Image 1: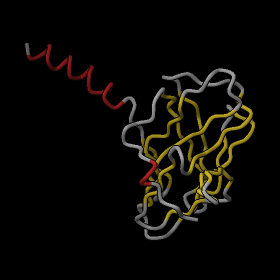
Image 2: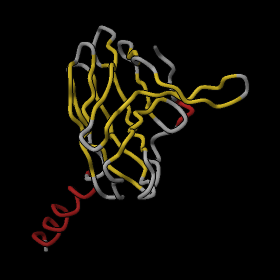
Image 3: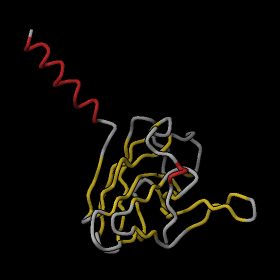
Image 4: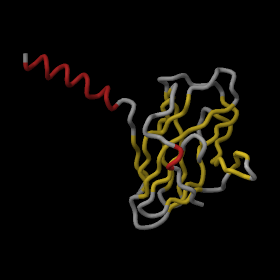
Length: 159
């Protein structure tokens, strides 16, 4: 009986962590890179994640790249004259001890010229380039829905 319970637990535990994935680049901790599944004909997609600066100095996300798209740009949604507008930003500062969320209706990495749209359950590589922490490749999990832990109202504006 104990062997059966142990075996079932051993098989179940990895599946609990399969959707949660984290990365480290110097003092920058990157939580759960994800993208929403888009229609197959959509020419763009967006990638989201949470950045935590665990260091004593500020760092900046300078850009991103991926082999699945012709171009990747850091974008931000902003309220301008009563309208929501999306625009490219040169970099995003991450203060010491701070957290910056890349989430729908906030910061995100916009992917242009996709070779093909990824489907829910798939992953694709995305390289994030930080001023001090350098480059780190993460795997972006494609999902049908937004993760419950990612809420845009907690998004921090930092530049």
